[in-house]
Image (tube, rainbow, N blue to C red; front, side, top):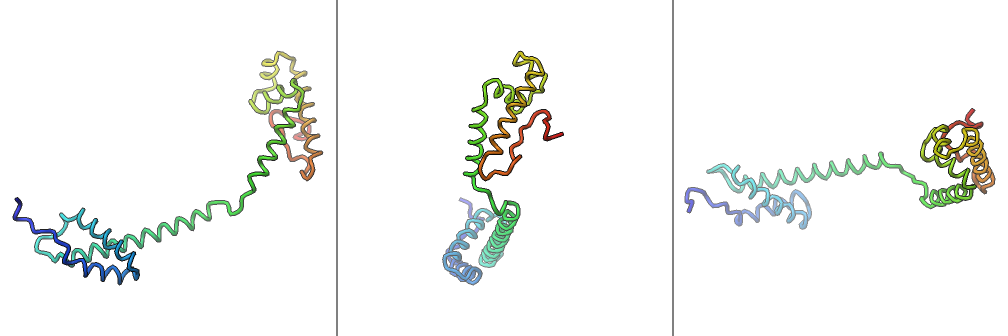
Length: 181
């Protein structure tokens, strides 16, 4: 047995700790949580207690430091919450509109004749150059450009006829067309 070490007996100090915690927090439940946190911290750091020092003073110091750390942590969390409000968009467009719009574009794309759809897909979606797409389809470059032009015109027609949609909102990427010139 190690008789040289003094007992780390905190039971007699609980009354003082609870009163001080209640004075700091002004709430009985928060005070109990603070005392618990301080006791856990004191036990974990019991080796820092100086021999011959006042256990009561040391425990109240640990309790006070635990309270200060908690206040700082809550302030930092509140600041992060406020900052996240500045970083996030305050207003978001309804997700349903995008889903409906995407379904409309997809339906119009799938309604294109197969040769126009495949040519437009290779250039606009897969990012192939006109030359590469023509090679992949096994057609002359002029035929590819003609098919893409007709596909774009059909999609623009769908866009221009869509109720409530401004003209020219749909842009087909890949290559140049007469609207980009």
